Length: 221
Image (cartoon, rainbow, N blue to C red; front, side, top):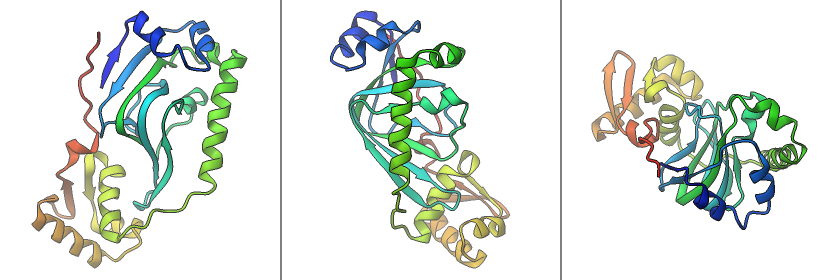
């Protein structure tokens, strides 16, 4: 992830955006963020309070339930908006957005500016339109086909703190399987080097760093 604060580059980047005038009128500092494929823009553990509009590139937005089931929400491209829920103090607990093609967004920090933004009718229309589109998409969601083995990985990667599974019995209950089935899957993953056992009933997913939990250091121009 790379943040760019050069005002001339920001203005040039949003010059063709239909809400260019609205963005320029906001009493906030606009900046650009460049993401590489595979980076997460949105996840429950990311708390940047950023409002972002995709200018170029592509991302995949999906919803992970507590049992590891994965739902595809959208494939965002130009003008897709992220972070509008933060305006209404709604904590993201299950929605993820991952870059699939090198992406550039224009962004600004919403923290400490909520009242100002909520009083701007043009901006609230923009945010409300985005939320309405997402709600419409969520009403037609179908779970992506997945095996129990795939759901175990999704659960560890997205629902377990630091990708550590703790407690076979309680995890099996959440995944709607038997403890024996779960243990058999974990044993197989351990042999394959996917997980490592860290204690009784505890396993660490070894692709932790690739899951996007650790963020790259910011670079600015």
